[in-house]
Image 1 (cartoon, rainbow, N blue to C red):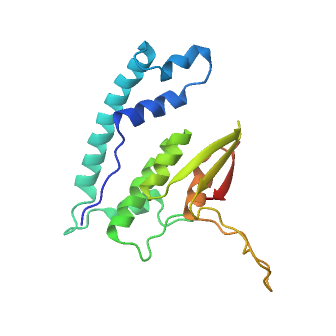
Image 2 (image 1 turned 30 degrees about the vertical axis):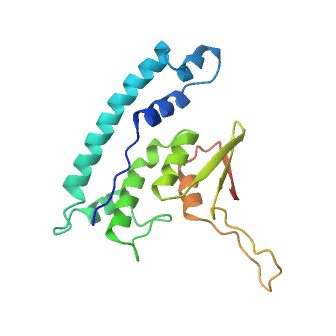
Length: 183
């Protein structure tokens, strides 16, 4: 069994860096191919990609792939606080547990809308994000919004919460509200 470690392409890293810049005339060259600022960001993207690849290979080879041995998976989970309110270990395969550890390590680097989309894709979840205002994000995806049944029931329903909601509510900035909608 082999777990795959998600690595970003040079273009994904460059776009992620560019999205971190403020919008406006001063930084519009961040998105213009061939501009000096874009070339600088591409160079940074290459180097960040090399670092990410080296780290992910070292982490994977040293701590996860040794299935015949312990592989220190339990220690990684303990250090990262897994299980918690979002991540569980019950009924999970070793590969799923490794993906959870990798995701938990990447949670602190989720900043831009594209980072949220890339992060959700680690779990095979496709989402789209609309910024309806500076402090409100609308996230759409398949089965990501908990909700009420569409009919009357003889009990008081409570709003459900999906795995994605749980994680995104932990990593979002405190001044940002997220609205979850199903496709």
